[in-house]
Length: 567
Ligand code: SAH
Image (cartoon, rainbow, N blue to C red; front, side, top):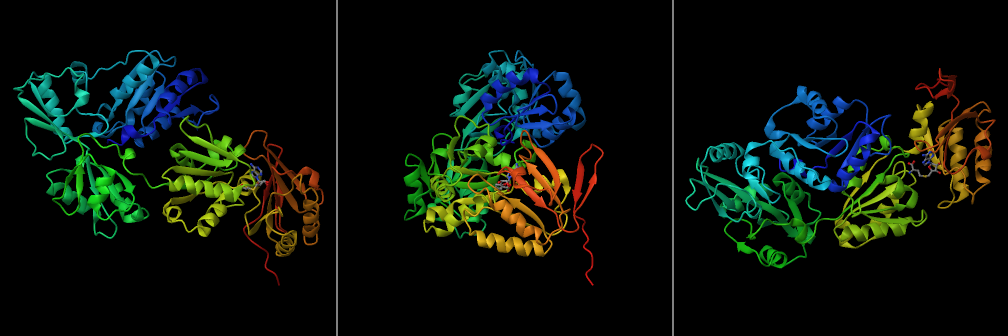
């Protein structure tokens, strides 16, 4: 549950009138995404169709919700899916003009804290109604980041005891409680323990663990999570006090270590190789107290660990495809990657298309031609521990950055580059987006070619065109023409026309998925290079590609699944 409030909230608006308030809240959450009703709101990160269905889907995905509408609408929308209150995301209603913030659901996942944050940001009062919180000025069951409650059920009993008049003694360091109005006394009947040690459950006490323990790990150990737990228990601690795992740089790419960190729900950080794990800890956390009682060395710090300040993380490099341009055609994994990026590299047009970005995200815009240099720069940043995104339009593996990035890695002998977590995330390529708009011209075998001879000799283009046209494949042309190459499309079409009839359908998609998009269907006989520019996708049909009128006045183009038997 601690994870829920870490999630990026969805700021849901119904109309353009609440966009100003939504943007103010978005500033507060940095990565928060605005979700707008399609047709009523434009220029937001996410569009939805039905308000109630969308709210329910967000709630069920445990996404924190800030809905800019009447509280009643939110209540009615979520009523049918309300579940277990121990496991629900924060849900808040926010007045369109920002004048009222009402926490509705998710008391145990920090809704009141969010309400206070938003209220402070908008300079209004939060409508807090939770009794323990009103009385004590804090929710004991929802300690701040870096602390975890040991047992929720015990916690609920504990708070009702305090509400019923019992007094409290706090043992350990709980800085966030100094502002609270708790019924504390030296002789308190109930004890709140704050620290890293495990304690047996009891009616009279409650434990909140400080996540101040670090365990050092290395590759090649069996069942690492079990060993970490064993090390914690041997030292009298608990998994809930674990704040971070630490390993040597040389183990950075080991999947078992990352899996262990995932299973244990903590960050995995790295430090330059040392003679022993103890030494690794001493280098990275010199002020902590070393504990060597279990199978793995560990260190206890005086306060919750801040993993991002310990050693460094494994750098990540994602080569992503934005799709043709429209936000709806961008895959969710790509959106998530853009949200986590520290650095974004790419051709300026595509970087702009991938935005908006937060102030803390660094944009590195370069010329379209500097692919290898950009790929190397991306590895340098990622090898230093940053989360780096290289953007391409369409799909990154189709005449775009993915191959350049892999070539840079293949050429490199730098172990730091090899350890970077590299992932290629696909996108909807221009040929596919154009084909879908036109119908299904790529419904049978097809061939994809770039007509640019910047990186390959023109003779190979002509040979391939000749053979592909002869093989009766549908042809998809990327980079069909440019100012520097004005005559080549004509020459390419001469080759194709040797094998294809003049009535062969040709689809021209320009700026597909972008403002001002156009789609034209012409015959191969009619096709002139002047109808095409570098923002056009050209799909030349095969002998079986058909065209027929559609009800809206346009035309459908498709290539059937079958192929005539040749005698
Ligand atoms: N990686 C990209 C292709 C890059 S090559 C992809 O997968 O789509 C650039 C060529 O792609 C352009 O010259 C044009 O032919 C085509 N193209 C890219 N985006 C397009 C769009 N939105 N509409 C039409 N053609 C596009």
